Length: 190
Image (cartoon, rainbow, N blue to C red):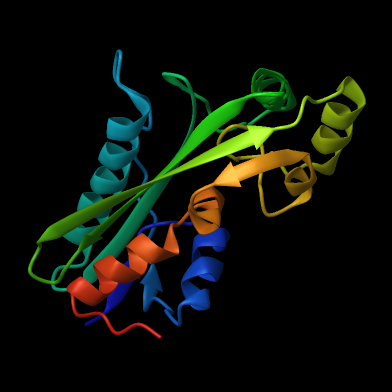
């Protein structure tokens, strides 16, 4: 069965390679990612992964389609993907010295069109950040396009005091859940 990755994220490709998976094609979905009014972070993450998968599955009938979405949530607030330095600075200031959740949803639609979903929730705690630490991180550029304005697999790892959950989920694709979905759909892993 052909596997299509519904994501343009190079991190997701790298993570899949860790479990021996190389998709046959990469076909990102272009959808409106605006949260619904009063939409909570977990249902939002699951909805985004499912919608991305459905759009791409319609373009690749008979193929398995893997999609995902990662949301950084501080309380009920869904933090944006930082596309500018001001947004990244606001996110980092909000997360400074606090715990937050990283919700990583995965959807796998098999060749028969059956969709399966999983959600990984991790807890990440930043140390209290000084302005010079925020400025140095912003200067690195790693924050660009990242949910919550940081990438745990880079320099931000030195700012994380504690983490509970899935490291790969925080990066963008929870491998335990992904592998389980792939195996359930008959996609060989490892």
